[in-house]
Length: 591
Image (cartoon, rainbow, N blue to C red; front, side, top):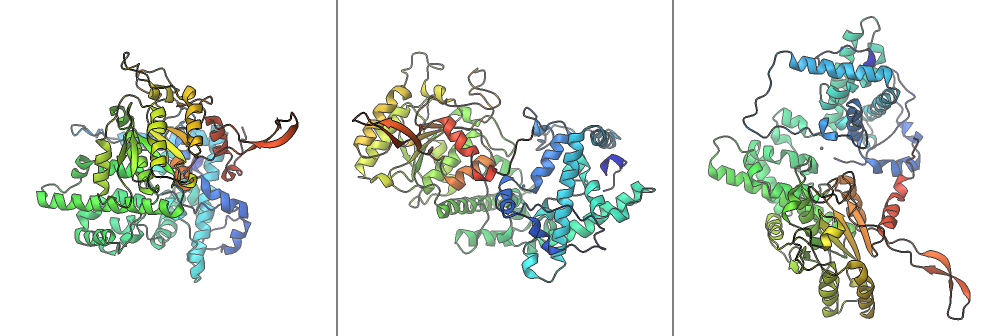
C-alpha cells in the first residue's frame, strides 16, 4: 500500500448514494466477477439511516485532514481544504526550481511515516480505501450487465473517488492503495514502483473513466470542450453554481436558450440543495462576476452574460423555494433579520458571510410562510417593524428582493418584547386568525449573543435598554393565551459560527458560542451555519417541542394523581431533541 510506495510524479454535492458493502472479495477485477446480490449484505437499517451522514467526498476530506494532523476539535480545515487563492493581482507565484517536487516528497514522507507509526491513521486510510474499492467493484459489475435496473443503481462513488494527482491524492496518496486493492495481480513485489504505476493507470482508465461517462459527469464534456452535448437540466446544483460563468462564455446561445426556458417554466434547473446563503452571496457579487468575463469583451456582451447569470440564480432560488413548499416544512414562521455592518464578518469558505445567511433564510421564510405572516420579515431594531417582501404576490426578481432586504433599517439591538406584543399578536388579532394559522416560530438571524442583542449599552451607554425578556415572558404568554393563541417559540440563531460575538468581546466561546442559556424560557439556541444544520432546518422546518412529561401532581382536592405536564421548553431540551434523532442511532462513541 502507500507505506511501500516511492514518491513519483506520474499521474462540490451531498448525495443519498452512500452505500457500504462487505470487503470480502479482493480478486483481480477482470478475472473475478462481482455478484450483484452483494447488496443483500446491507441491512435495512444501514440503507435507511446510513445515508444521512454525508457523501463519499467526506471520507477523503477527513483523511486529508488526518494526514495533515488537522482532524481534531481545534484543527484548521482550511490549511488542507478550501485553500484560498491570493486575491492580490500583484501576487507572484514562486517558480523556484524543484519546489513542487520537494513539496510532493515532503507530503509523501509524512504519510508514509503515519502508515508505519500511527495505528489510527493506518486503520483509517485502509478503511477508506476498502470502502471505495468495494463500491467501485460493485458499480462496475452493474455497468457491465445488460440490466437497466442494475445500471440505474450505480452510485456516485465513481464521481467522488480520488483522481490521480488530484487534491486528495496529493495529500494522502490514497489512489495507490485503492488501485492495489482493485488490481492486486498487477502489483509485483519485485518491481513494485513500476507495476503500481500501471495499476494506478488502470484505475483511472478502466474504472473511473467508464463510470464517470455513464454518470454523465459534467466535467467530462467541459474538459473535451464539447459544450453542445451538455444536458443542462441534469447538471447538479453545485456544479451549475460553479460553472455558470463558464457556460455563459463558452456556450452562450445554447445556455441562454436553456435559461430562457427555465424562466418560462419550460425547463428545470437544479438548485434545491444549494444553501440560501450561497445564492445570496452570488447574486450580490457583481464585481466578482465581472472578473469572469472574457478580456476585451464589449459592454453589451458583459451585460448579456451578467443577465444570464442573474436569470440562472433566479431559477435556482425558485427551485429551492418550490422544494421547501412541496415538503411543507416551513409554513408557520417569521424572521427577525439582522443586516448590521458586523454581519459581513467572518467570511466562510464558500464566499458567504452571516449577512448572506440572514438575508437568505429570512427571504426563504417570507416566500414559504402563509399570510398574513408570509411575504414579510421583521427588522432587527430597537423599534422593530414588519417589512413586506417575498411571497407569491411579489413579482420582483431574486436580486431585487435581496437588495431590498439589505437596505432595510437596523440598530445595535432589538426589542424582542415589542416583536411579540406590538407586531405579532396585533397582526393575528387584526386578521382574526385561528390558532392553527398562528405563526409558531420566530427566528432571529443575527451574529450576536442573545444578551448583547437585547441591550445597546455596550455601544451607547445612555441608550434605553429594551424590556427584559425573562421578566416579560409570563406577561406576553398570558396576553397570547387571553387572545386564544399559544405563544410562538423564539429561535435565536447566531450565524457567526465560531466567533464569540463582536471582535474584542469576551462574550461567548470561540469554539461554539451559545447565544442563549438554558434559563431562557420559550427560546432555543442555534449556533453556526453549515450544510448539515441547513439540511436539518429545511427538512424539518422547526425544532420540535419537548415531549410531555408524565408526573405526579396534586389536584384541587389535595389528591395526588398522575398527569401529563408540558415539559419545559429551553435550549438544552432543543439540543437533546436534535441529537436524539433516529438517524444517529447507528453512530457510537468508541473512545
